[in-house]
Image (tube, rainbow, N blue to C red; front, side, top):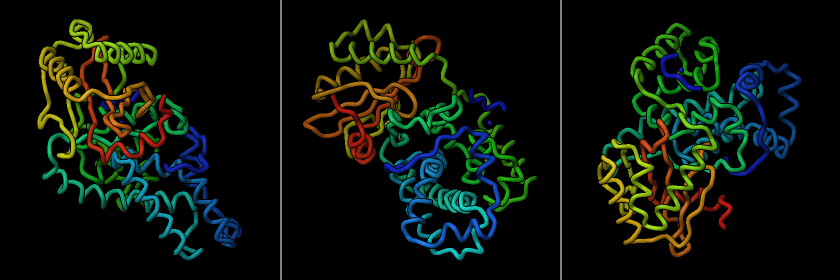
Length: 332
């Protein structure tokens, strides 16, 4: 479990644990190893695709955006493809460094865009139904949760990179240092600053996978039936609903609080604009509700569950954030 008190476009994907990531990440290739990656363009593409799953895993957690993470990977490939053989001692380490630097640059510019973003900002949903490489361990799964990704928004770009590499991928400070261009001591300090900023935050799942799925199914049934009491029974007294429309779809400009307000707002929106279809998919490592209207993406709803009740309702209805998830969904 993740504890703050302590911290891809289809292609070939590697299966590995966090320990595998560390051991393989920093393995040093010999000159012949490097040359073996060079000869044919097709070989280089295949070699990059073999790293795509891991690189996307890092980039998405740093950015919270599928489209931005894929853009970063495209740029990383171009820079690696232009690099001289002597510059690449370890292909994965070289690519990881490029990806982290590009992500930190993107995070700096994203801060300015967030200041003019219409309404609350939420991460771009990531379909993980067929992506066991992204969720194969508890740490990997929980670090995809909206709660965790939103928690990271409190950190500076460098702190976020250090925290993710250390807490999620189990890097040593000496391994992180060359990636973020800091000393190991500076990385240790950045990690501790990040922990202090995140003190009191909880990003862990408090419900089992089965309980999450049951509550999500009950929430979907109650919503479809307009069952007021059924929804009230599922919601915590101090529940919060956060909607992201980005000014391109109807959503509240600020979070809605309290059980009664959340219930009325949610059912009211469904009565005004009911979806054509709604079903459950695995999104960001947990069961989520995916809906369409007039054959187009309508929304994704994720529930954060604590003490057996829904504590937070995350609704993403910004169409720009729904493109990738609908194309990958197994629509009923």
